[in-house]
Length: 193
Image 1 (cartoon, rainbow, N blue to C red):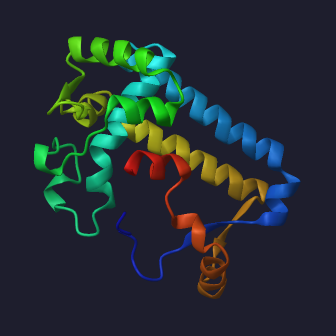
Image 2: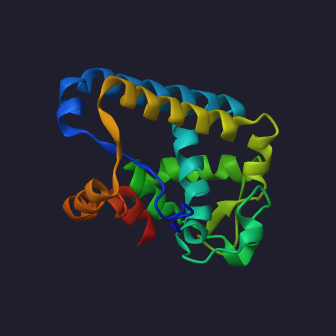
C-alpha cells in the first residue's frame, strides 16, 4: 500500500525491552480492541461470528487490489464505492482454505449473504461486496471510531514504554532489521493467490 506520510514524519517503533516487560498489558489492549471492534461490526451487519468472518474476508478481498496499488485513483480513497474494474474478488474455495472452515459451510454462508444482498457474484466463483460497505459504516462514524481505538492502543503502548517515536537513524536501522515486517501477512498472501 502506498505510504501517504510526509518525508521526515515520525513513526512509532516497537521497543523490544519495553514490550517484553509489559507484554501482558499490551496483548490485553490489542486483544480487547480487536474483540470489541469485531463485536461492533458483527452487530452492525447483523451477522454471527462465522458469517462475519466470511463477510469480512470478502470485504478485504474486494478492496485488496486497490489498497495495494502504488498509485491509486485519488477519487476512490474516501467512501465512494469502488467501481467493478478496481474491485477484487475471492472464491468460495479460497475462503474455505483461508478461514479453515468446510467448503459446504462457506457455500451456505455465501448463499445467505447473497440472499441478503450484502455480496454479489460477478462471474462464476468471483465473490465481492455489493458496494457501499464503507459508506454504510460511515453513516454511524464506525470507521472513525475504529481508527480512534487503534490510536488509543498505540498511545497506550507509548505510555507503557512498549513503543517509542523513532528518530531517523533508528528508523533506518530498524527498517533493515525488520525488512519482513512490511510484507504481507500469511493470510494476506493466502488470499492473494
